[in-house]
Image (cartoon, rainbow, N blue to C red; front, side):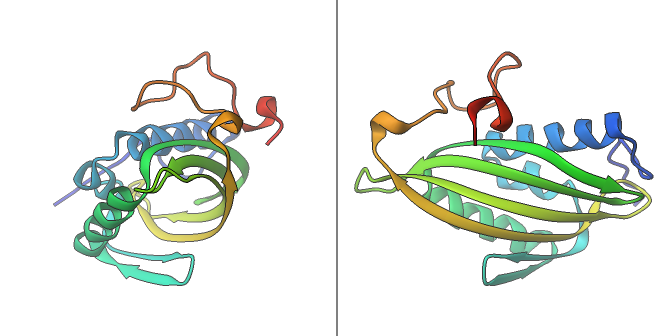
Length: 156
């Protein structure tokens, strides 16, 4: 199977930013199967303290995540890039089943194969409890609208 996921490395500023936005859009879909297709079949993740390997584990991880992190809305921003690697910073807002709201902040390091599939994802994440009145991500569930402010514009 010859899968490709443009844009392909080596990345330039424009293509790295495009790759970041495509990842944000996929994660905001909250569709684990769709998201998993951006990763190599044997992709390796470190997400917080959890290790995940391969698409099947990615799908399971994301199902558990979005069953717990309700009304999830994410913004990613390009931080740096070189060759086949991209670093991003991100924030997402969600609430638990008791109605407690959080803003989770983090950084990810990504490495891609020549086909543009991510083979390595290393994520470090911190959760900040917030009141509902301090939420900043108010678009309808799904893709962040093009006109919505990013992390820098929101002061995050």
